[in-house]
Image (cartoon, rainbow, N blue to C red; front, side, top):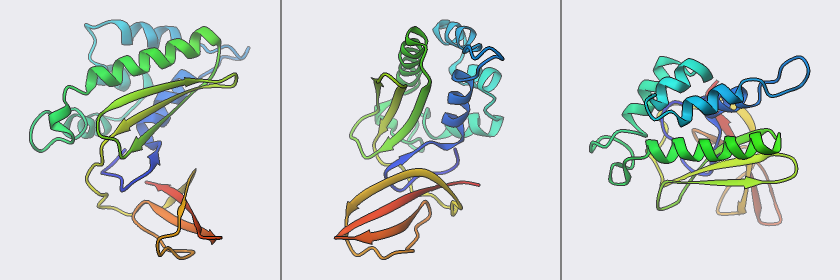
Length: 187
């Protein structure tokens, strides 16, 4: 993860690691780490971030960041008036992972900014289970992101020019009044 995001959708390091754990397969192609992950998530005696540290391999820095921003009920935390967010995140992951496990489908997770509340959407298709984490806006990033990722948003042109960059996006094309904007993540 890192610092904030300006707008749109993001995957980030933590969601990438959670999805990698959920989608890990053994040599025969069977999802082989889901049962232990799901059992740990369902155990209310285990701390959510400790599970992500121990099983998904998020870093201590990632856990510290999440505690200070996402899950901080103090005035310096993001969305402090909407706390507690941790249980929503945990139960959203349990629901998504349960649906993926029942259907033997991959899990794909994204963070979408711009809502009024913190909520999780879980969508099932014949090909995958998609988990969308919706949140209100957060503070803008303070560091430039340099790695282009396969996430785009298309929007009516509002003064964008091809090649224009922000901290976390780059305008790839402007055609017929539509700007195609690509997401950038930290390297």
